[in-house]
Length: 137
Image (cartoon, rainbow, N blue to C red):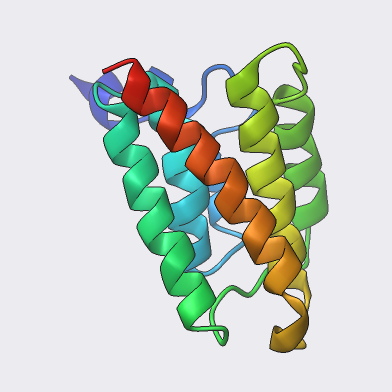
């Protein structure tokens, strides 16, 4: 159906924006890491999507020249997703928000040697998401 191709529900719900509005403001690697985290809850195998996000995060860390952010309008879109994820009682939202904040902070740092603490925090958040999703399989 057209709905399955153009704007399927898992591309937006429960967010006020479609995930592509965020990922389009980053490079392919970083955008994919974000996409797999933000959409995993609406897929048949969320742990698999989170493992894909981990692969892209590892690539970002191993290739520090990647991970640029398109400045125009990016912060407003990031802020909308963080607001949509602001449910402290929801472990997924808490870890997804921590992942998104950490990855965005790492991307913003042009001195690659100073990205490490943000990369490590993104890894911890993503590993917590993976562990939780793996238990539900």
